[in-house]
Length: 154
Image 1 (tube, one colour):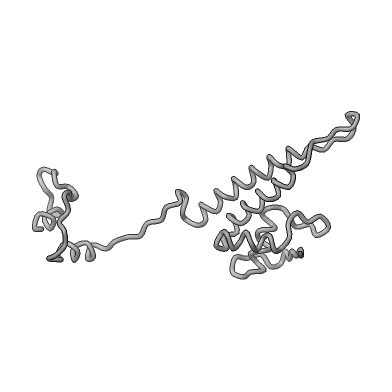
Image 2 (cartoon, rainbow, N blue to C red):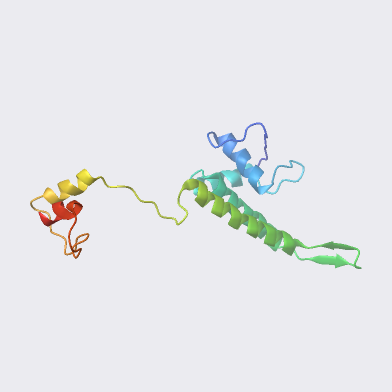
């Protein structure tokens, strides 16, 4: 197991840059108190198709899970440690990073769509063995516009 962090190499174009970026966004940059190992971040990056925000969300969940195993303690009202607060904070961080991943990957709803050209649609209508659709765009539009003229021909 290993830990590495290089603040001068934070990017999304290289393996080391993505590793450093994930460490940065989850706040695991202190080599004297590492929260996760490089191998765990590599696994998260692999699972998230190298999206640093999704990987960061995965890592934040993992860190939160580590703190969830620990109990809150208080000694005579003077010293206390509340691991449940850390668990909540890492859970919130995970949610925020997941949203960032959606925002930067362009799939805010988890759905992507591609465009179809007019030429492709028109050539599909020209196919002689094509099953004709039961419904077409603007089939009940009255009066039909010039744009709808090509539909009436088929």
